Amino acid sequence: MPAPPVGVVGLGQLGGSLAAALVAAGRPVQGWDVDPAARDAAAARGVQITRELSGVVVLAVPLTAMAGALDGLTIDPDATVTDLGSVKRPVLESVGRTLGGRYVGGHPMCGTERSGHAAVDPGLFTGARWALCLEPDTELPRWLRVAEVAMAAGAEVVPVTATEHDDAVAAISHVSHLLAAALAAAAAQAGPLALALAAGSFRDGTRVIGSDPAFVRAMVEGNAGPTASALARVHQQLARPWAELVADGHAVVTRQGGRRTVRVPLDRAALLSLGRAGGAVTHRLAAFVEGWVPEDRAPEDRLPDRA
Image (tube, rainbow, N blue to C red; front, side, top):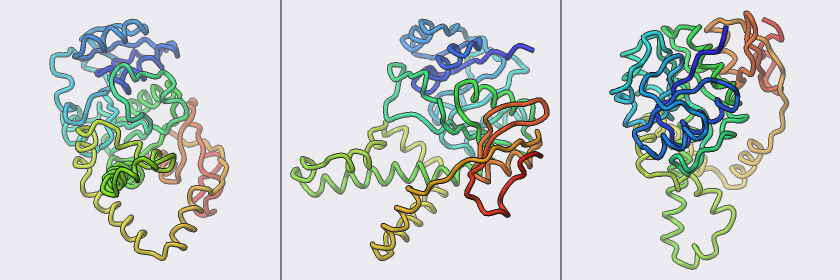
């Protein structure tokens, strides 16, 4: 069967990059954006600009606009709807409540501090992890359709629940934005000499807070509970003896480990086990998906090579 079309609502950096990647992969892509310049840029890349969307519909709009993203558009009644939002529980409670099993929450772990259609990069998703939510009422065939879209764009799919996703990204993404803001503000308090001497480590540590402040606020406030818990863990780490803290942090980021290929049946529990083990899906097979888990996991946490 031919792959279903993909309709992208919002053609800025993420949505425009996804549309461009899928066009390059040979997928039929429709799209819409309220900005005429974004529509024109997408059309020049081979996207069919239309308000009538079908197949897999991707909401690539800010969190604050997610609930009304489909207003004024004609969506095929059988379309599967997903999103690229950085927080999942609020979208599940709004879009998911309306669409039920037709909605599959998603979040590609990529992007830069830039935004808008001028920041489109067809290679943005290559090698990226793409969290894809499997809730109790998620229809597995629809989950697989969205997973195939993510993999067609070059990403690896991590099966999660919305709650697991929000807890995890609070620790590795949302707190990072707050720490970057704090580092920048503290350096400014130190005076112009400190800022004049700032080099690579300061630039790397503050890069993400160059993002649109409205985007960052919506992200951390939309995931306030998990972000506060993750920030508390950072405070606890900073209270440790500095030598121990430096050694432990260094060990985490320099740890080497390989990947072990696994095949997982098309079953919600098995897929979620793959994600919880730190692995990802890379290919769709007939009755399985193929993926990997980290090689250095404890034996009791390992998945079988063949399910």
